Amino acid sequence: MSSLPTPSMLRGLRKRVSDRGGDHIDGAGATDAGTSRCSSRDAEREDMETPQACGGARRGQRALVRSTSASSAISQLSLLSNPNLSLLDSDVKIVEGSKDYPVIIVVVGASGDLAHKKTLPALFSLYYHDMLPHQFAVVGYARSKLDREKFHDVVRSHLVCRITDRDTCERKTAAFLDRCFYFSGQYHDREDWRKFHEWLTEEIEWPMIHKQQQRLIGANGDGGGGGGDVQTERVPGRLFYLAIPPSVFADTLGGISSEAMAPESRGAWTRVIVEKPFGRDTESYEALRDVVSSCFTEDAVYRIDHYVGKPLVANLTTLRLGNFVFDVLWNRHCVESVQVVFKEDFGAEGRAGYFDSYGIVRDIMQNHLLQMMSIVAMDPPASPMAADINEAKVKLLRDMRPLRAKDFVIGQYDRYRAEQGVPPGSTTPTFAACVVQIDNERWRGVPFVMSAGKALDEKKVYVKVTFRETPNHSFVPEELQDRRNSIYIEIQPRPAVELSFISKVPGLTGRVVPTKLDLVYNESFVEEARDMPDAYERLILDAIVGDRTLFISDEQISRAWSIFDPALKEMESAPPMQPALYAYGSPGPILPETLIKKFLAGKMSSS
Image 1 (cartoon, rainbow, N blue to C red):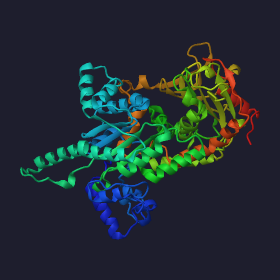
Image 2 (cartoon, rainbow, N blue to C red):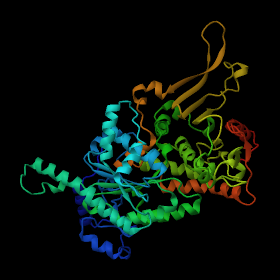
Image 3 (cartoon, rainbow, N blue to C red):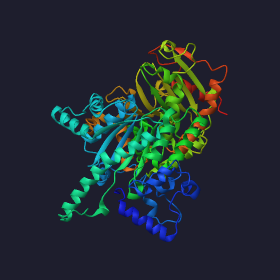
Image 4 (tube, helix red, strand yellow):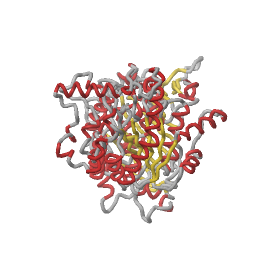
């Protein structure tokens, strides 16, 4: 089990590479011309404790990356991510090996809805379950004028203990709030970010380091005023969680990269978690990517899709690749169709203004459902490491045909145009279903149906793999000959895996009926299910330890937009494609099974 590299290891590593003349730095930002773009304030601070980066000029100084000139040992160390970690590693063991590495989690947009409902409660739960480093701090950064006490009140109102032990909960809540701080600043104001960095260094980082020094003095038996074994001091890493709208990404990332980076020269890292939406088409994503890459290397950017962190989605790879009975059937010769379905039983209430500018395709299908589909359909990766899983997913996305408007059925629930924030005559779909085709040897000719909708008859997210008709009907009654074996994987609300088949009923009747074997998480893993971590907890924890396995790469997002862009442009060009109206609480305008039948019957184009 690999723990995070120590500062002394990294210093020694740099020296070894430098002595060899190896190019261990990302060349994108390591030129003299790039360095000259830094402001004079950055240059003046070089002699201080935190040499800063300006835009993309010093991106090369922030990460040790894999290179052909470096040894295999060198290739496995990074300030920004830990490529030693894999999908099968125990989070508990990784955390235990990383407890002595301090971290400061900065929640940018801490006064907003996402931070209140997801980010801060997830951090509290990680603390409650002793999954954070011994030394940590949670810092809120937002425009709202709050003092620390008022920030504590806001945070406290959103914290819930999953284990109903009030005494423990209240004690741990108070202890967590003692680690929570707040700084009010503008996202676009570099001076505010400079002040934030100075405040963070003086008020939070140095007290952490001072405590380490005191422990080192005691451990070394040095009763004098020396600093102890300073080589083992650890400057906190900084994890910035951007819980903000995309409109302020550029200003925020620029402020962080030029004014608020952790001191990399002392072995500290800076990572950034970015939430969707990642643009609304290829052009806007490329513009966003240019902003991000001008400030941070790819290794430092953790793009979060919380569906990938859900327990059963995270287990999909192991489920299909770790079981021979599934792996050998996972191809076009055995599989007839695949469904990836998202259903909500409520509408766009409360966020209709945002939703109307994106629609169900951008909001759900281009990210959540496509990620689940790529995990289900990718070829086996070379290993469970993040790089190999990413490579397998990107390869699959390249094999997917770009979608066109004719591949879609879209709908809109009947009350949608009455929602606050929705313009009259809106054609934004609240329901969409399409057939995705994959042009490779494994899946050619198999329809993959994506379906997503709001205001439907139930709340459910699932994957269903339906197998082909049995070639032997001798043991199948005529009335069951249209039934198919299937694997049904319910992501939420009841995580479960079901295998359907037909069986003879015990007794003398000779009756044959459809039945199933099921694995229900809450029943099969009773102890674990009582306190199952949610997706945000898992993903934040992975970002803290540098595990990129469940995060989305730039290549994946770029390819995702190239798949959906043609259809979106056709559907939204004048005159826009009109959605079919459906009743609130109904199954929607079309069922996935109907779409599959139309495709298999040749009523949808397969060219």
